[in-house]
Length: 185
Length: 41
Image 1 (cartoon, rainbow over the protein chains, first blue to last red):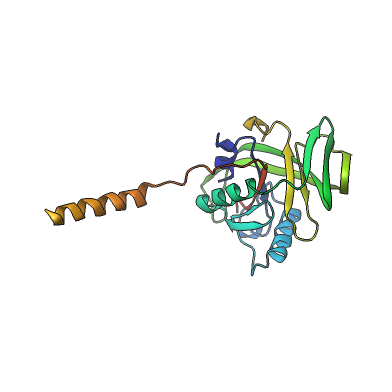
Image 2: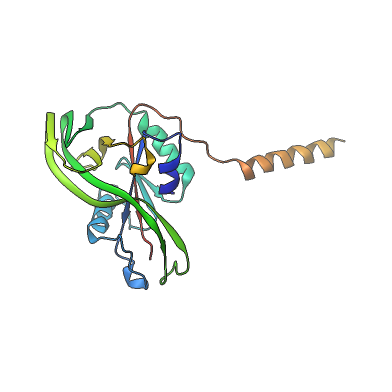
């Protein structure tokens, strides 16, 4: 699904897909090479913020506020459409090695390194024998700073930045370096 | 004749339900982040 979003011409430059590979299924016979306990913790933070009963995969979270089954194309597209029409409260953009923007709220500036990888032939676990694509994999996510008002923060080689409310986890603004060129993700 | 019309209409409605695919969303101005929590395992 994440590959479909990243390659959909109608969404190019308007939607930033981020694939977080969780690690809590690694005991089932296949260790996901892109998994991290950090991403499992991030999903758990959404479980608390969105008042869910449990976590599951695949799970999609749109702008930190709406969640649905990660294979439910219709629900994801509906949520994307609604979120894209909300008023832009904050702004962020990537300018060289910096993220620049403005926000009237206290928000966390995150910087991510995102890239795709060759397909994986899974040789164990529930998906044994399947060849899985690996699009928009989050390799590194850094909370750069708490920002308010006009800001400029160094983000180095990050190719995605976003502003997220530290309490509600709502994402207010996001930008990607070369997001219009799908090869970059 | 009426029965045939009803059957044709029912088949047409069923085919619409079966083959209708969600269209790409009508996009506004904001860039949206879609996070997918997934696992190969």
